[in-house]
Length: 234
Image (cartoon, rainbow, N blue to C red):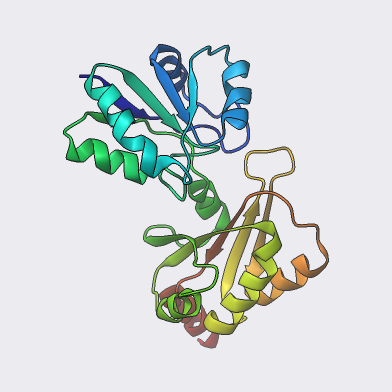
């Protein structure tokens, strides 16, 4: 029987890939890619010449059975997403689950993911945190935000550039405009930006600033917020 390798790829800077990941991508029989064009840039950079097949949210339900059968017949297959670790707000969970149910070996390599550097850069408590990824765009969004109003731990969100200001204003309404937060943009790239402050201060900054690139928002949890306010009063 073969094996499914889940291989993290750089979130921006092409140097942020492990030697082991490069070796695995050179050795496997097939690479599954969320976007073959984006993955092609990485493969060309590292002179990796392997067959690449699209594997994304629009075709994964149909293609998974045949992929699992190929692995069971002895092929080794690597799964990559456009950036970061597959299955973290990207395709990957369904095929990993299918392989696990069929007793197909899975090996996930350690590597890049956007929320860890964003969390550490934020300066907010990182001993305990909750990763929310992308919130629902419409249905269920307000309900989830209401539930998070009492969240004690630091919260991490992914957001798109054109929805950043809307999300920040929603956070301010639910969590309070004085809640500390951080917005990380273009992580690992030349124009990386980490903006820290209260939600209100960050909203004011991005009201006039250019908003481009992938975005991670880190928001202070309720326990830290209460403690900092208590310390100020003392």
